[in-house]
Amino acid sequence: MTHPPDIALARTVLAAQPFSALLGARIARFGDGAAELVLDLGSDHRQQHGYAHGGVLAYLADNAATFAAGSLLGAEVLTSGLTIEYVRPARQGPLRAVATVDAATTRNAVCRIEIHGPDGTCALAQARVTQR
Amino acid sequence: MTHPPDIALARTVLAAQPFSALLGARIARFGDGAAELVLDLGSDHRQQHGYAHGGVLAYLADNAATFAAGSLLGAEVLTSGLTIEYVRPARQGPLRAVATVDAATTRNAVCRIEIHGPDGTCALAQARVTQR
Amino acid sequence: MTHPPDIALARTVLAAQPFSALLGARIARFGDGAAELVLDLGSDHRQQHGYAHGGVLAYLADNAATFAAGSLLGAEVLTSGLTIEYVRPARQGPLRAVATVDAATTRNAVCRIEIHGPDGTCALAQARVTQR
Amino acid sequence: MTHPPDIALARTVLAAQPFSALLGARIARFGDGAAELVLDLGSDHRQQHGYAHGGVLAYLADNAATFAAGSLLGAEVLTSGLTIEYVRPARQGPLRAVATVDAATTRNAVCRIEIHGPDGTCALAQARVTQR
Image (cartoon, rainbow over the protein chains, first blue to last red):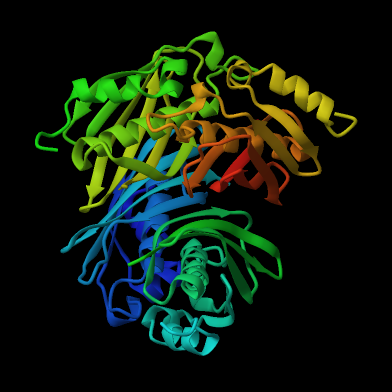
């Protein structure tokens, strides 16, 4: 890539992910080893007690990390591993997943992700993203 | 609970999760510290290269673990942490997430989850599930 | 506890850990949801290629997290789970493990830990610490 | 390597790790994607309450995974990430860390590790090991 990827390209990639379209995620920030995804919490995103499903939070963490790493390593990256700690249930949106690359080598980036909403921090995560 | 939860109850819980309904997950096995979720891989479940989105796999791992632990600890459980390692991309379904409780104390269970499809194992995961 | 634990108490606890004494870890900072452990890298801490053994880094991450959480939750805490991503091998010391509580509820804290040395960041970790 | 590595080579590698010698780990089983490390629990391995230190368990998990993966991928491997869930404190030894490769690609292996002792299972772990 001759230019670093920008937020317009990031939006194109996100729009090309059918699963992200199904969930309704938007990208609010992108570049310099960071990315922020936003999700309005609708009725479809919930588990049986009305909270955001853990899978929704894991999706946000995974995808935010891939974008943050992609801003440094280029678009051809994939998450090789993800750990998420659920802190407290989220009942209200919007949820914001903020990912930052905290360490990178030539082909790998380790990202930290914080997911928060109006109820406070709902999850903290860490991911390894690798160039394909 | 006077009786251990059975697969009929598990199906009721799964049906009460709007996010699981959105994704179309089914429960194929439940009981004795184990659970299996099945997902037909549709066009909505994919990322930009046509593979199952990592968030879909993370959802399956999280939810299968919760059911496996719930079969021992009762329905009022939640996943406190999840780690997933992506092994290889999955292009075809159905995907099957098989979770087993590999160690449990009175209020906690540690589960292992294997997700496989026609292309082989796509992810391995580990989760801690806790009684509320 | 009538007073929040201070660094003198933290040093007493560290000195009461035979494994920490065997490795030679010191505590450099403690309080307000943070802790820093320091380890001079001796010949005993290495693997077959002369780098710090991964187990040494995992020990530092685990222990720094316990102290950081203990500064908020009291001395009776234990780590329930730890994830560590190795970033690059460390050949020189001192190694510094800096842990911060990034989210806490009444009985749980999720900590992030960065381990760095003269060669740069060698590992990033995340841990859940729970009151006993 | 013209022959797959055998347990004699594994013992040579373990003996070349000063940190493993400091802790006193032995290798009891090696080959075909599996490895078992054994550790007699001495006074030096403990934390302030007399239990095996979490760092000892993390060391065992990390090292057992590296050997298990090395039996398939060759000696030049390193652990890129490790997640350990502590199940219950261990007061007595010997501790046994049994690692198996549960999924592998050409250059990566994902291992599961169970650590048990006379008191039962003390930890479950998962690791990614990569060819250098």
